[in-house]
Figure 1 (tube, rainbow, N blue to C red):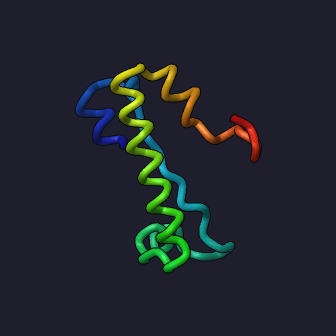
Figure 2: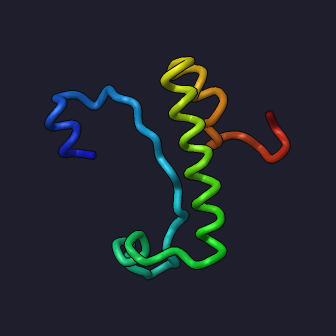
Figure 3: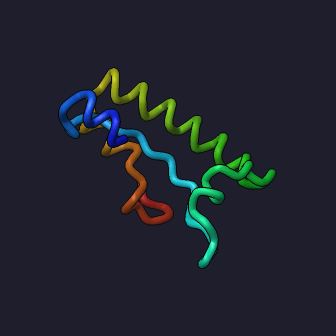
Amino acid sequence: ISSIIAELNTDQFCRLKLGIGRPAPGADAADYVLEPFLKDETIVIEASVDQAVLALECLMVEGIDAAMNKFNMHDKQEGDE
């Protein structure tokens, strides 16, 4: 991200983030993010990528506010719409 910020000369741009969790305590973060996903994790990742595609489509058609309201799951509780 820092190279993109440097090239654009701004940090004011849309970002789409997909979370992959955190490594176990004491585990190397670089190894964690670079290792292949487990089979059960792959199912979750595929669903997350599908949601990301929908979020990007919404961003392009309806704008950033609509996309953030529909797809930002950071603070949503289970069962909330």
